[in-house]
Length: 269
Figure 1 (tube, one colour):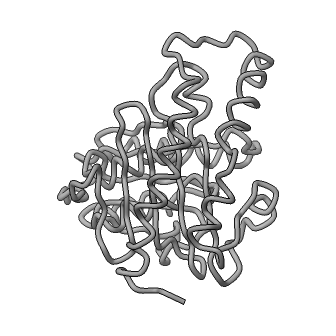
Figure 2 (cartoon, rainbow, N blue to C red):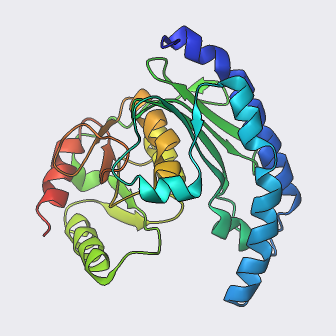
C-alpha cells in the first residue's frame, strides 16, 4: 500500500478534479440573493442540491483509490470515536450548505483520505473565487499552488480565535461551549463563532486566525482543514493536549499560542 508523500501526491490532481466538478454543480444552484423564509424552504432547497452534488462522487473516488472505504453519513454517526484501521474517503460534499442556501460565500467541498485514523490527503474547493486548498501529509499546505504558513504570534492576548458549532448539541454541551467562549473572550484579542468548521481552519492554515477549537466536531467537517492547518505549521491536539485524532474534541493553533489557548480551554468545566 503506497504511503509516501510522492505516492499520495500522485492522487492529488484527480481528487482536485472531483472536488471541482462537484463545485461547478453546486455553483450553478447558487444565488447571492437567496433568502429562505422557513425551515421548509431550507429543506426543499437542500435535498435536490445535495443529491445532484453527490452524483458519481463515491464511484469517482473509488476509481482513484479502490482500497479506500467510503464513509457515509450513517457510518459517521456510528463512529464518533474515530475510524477503524485502513483507508477511508471522508467527504462533506457541500460543506457549509446552510451558507449556500442563504446567499453567503463560505461553502465548498471537502475531500479527505484518512489512513489509520489520520488524514493524509486533503482537498477543499471553494467555488466562489475559484479557490482550491490542497495538502498531503509531509508535503505542506497550499492555496491555489501558493504555500500556506501558520501565524507567527506568540501572545494569546493579541490572537484572533475562532470556534464553531454543529447545531445539534444538547443543553450541557451548549453550556460548556458558552463557558469556553467566555473564557477565551477574557484571554484573546477576539473570538469569532462561525460555520462551517472548514473555513476557520483554513484561516489558521493561512495565518489569518491564530487558534480554532470545537467540541465533538464531525469528521467530514474537520479532516481536510486540520491536515491543511498542521501542514502549514499549526499544532492540533485534543483539549487534554494529546495529539488529535478523528472523533476527539479539537484545538488547532499556531505554535506560539497553542499552549496558552489549551490552558484556557482546559480550565473550563
